[in-house]
Image 1 (cartoon, rainbow, N blue to C red):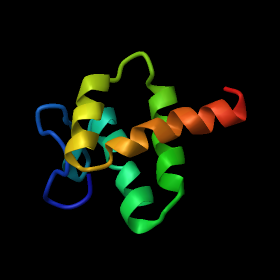
Image 2: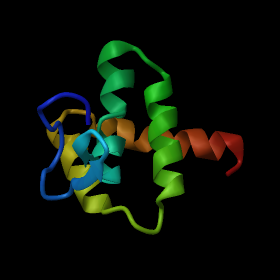
Image 3: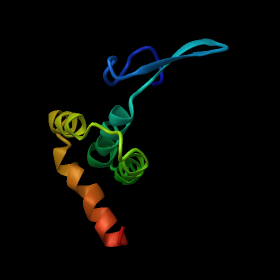
Image 4: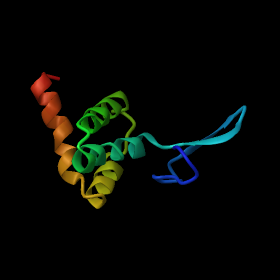
Length: 92
């Protein structure tokens, strides 16, 4: 999270203490959900690749229903299939 406003769920966020004070860290699900809009609305193709990498790195711990629901609500549900398609093309 950067700034004073959380762009994800405060309930899922983690607060850590640093030498400069507390810092709120977004959940992995919110980090994944924030990537497809980069590709869809701002033409940043690496948004989907970043979502793939995050999902693969945390495959055993992510709440898939939360990710799907948030992407649907953000009108990026169609981009949920893209990571699967990209991985299939790479043979992974």
